[in-house]
Length: 182
Length: 193
Image (cartoon, rainbow over all chains, first blue to last red):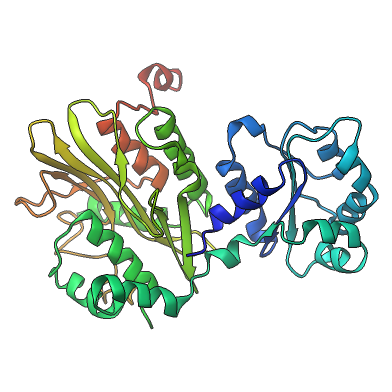
C-alpha cells in the first residue's frame, strides 16, 4: 500500500539539506496539509512556516515549510538562489519543504521557467492525496485473500452480528466499508 | 425526552464541527502517548489514511505491517496487556466524520479482560436505512457512546452516553482512564472558573 505520511517523510529525509516539494490538491486543503506535514516532523527539525524564499534561506538550520502566496515568484526566487541553496555562507542542515498547488502558477513556472529547480526536485516530490488513493481492485483482492470473502459479503455477516466484536474484526469492518462497491 | 433529542442533535453536529483539523490533533495526542512511554515512537509516522472516492479511512498502520493493526500499549499500571484502536471513516474534503471507533482493551495482571470502546456509528444511509439511529432509541443507544466492561459481548452491554466530543477529546478521555494522562488538570480548570 502507498502511504501518504510515509511518502512525505521519505521526500524530506531523502535530501536533508536540500529541497522537497509537496503537491497540494487546491487552496482549500493546503493549510490542512501543511499542518499534517508539520505534525509528522520530529521536534529537532524546529520546523517553521514562511511564505518567502528569503525567509526560508535565512534559517539554514531549521526545516522551512515554504508556503508561498506568490507561487511563480517563489519558483523564480528559488531558481535565482540555487547557488545559495547549494553552497551559501552556511551549509543548510535542514531542508526547505515547498508547497505548490496542482495546475497553478507554480507548477507552470516550474515546467517553463525554472529548469534547474525542476531538475533538482525531480524524484524529490510527494503527492499525499495521490498516495492516499487506494488501488481498489488490488486492495479488494488483498481483503479477499485474508477473509476468503468479498468486502460486501463480509460486511453483510458483520451487520448480522455473525463475527465476534474483536479489535481485529473492527479493523476489517472499516477496511471493508472503504472497499465496498456502490 | 428533550435531553436525548438534544444530545442526538449535538452528536450529529459534532461530526462536521472541526473540519479536518481533528486528524492533526489526534496525531499530536498519539505522539504525546509515545513520549510518555506507552507506545512506540514510530507512531508519529504511522497514523495515516487511505481513500476511495468520497470516503477516507484513518488508522494506525502496524509497525511491521502494511495495513491497520491494534497498537500495543505498555507501561500501564495494573495492566498486563493492552492495545489501542483509532479508526475513522470521514469525508476526505470536508473532514465530516461518518464513523469512529477509539478503543483500548487487554488483560489485567490477574488475567481478566477489560475494554473501553467509544463508538460513533456510520451515519451514511448507504450503511443502514436508519443511518446512525441504532437500537430502539436515543437514550439506550446514543450515537456517541462508550462500552465499558470485560468485553463487548457480556450482558448487560453497557452503552454510556458521551457528550458531543471531537475525536481528539475522545482519545483524551480513553487515555485518561488507563494511562494517568490528564489534559484538563483542576489547577488549570480553576483558572477559567
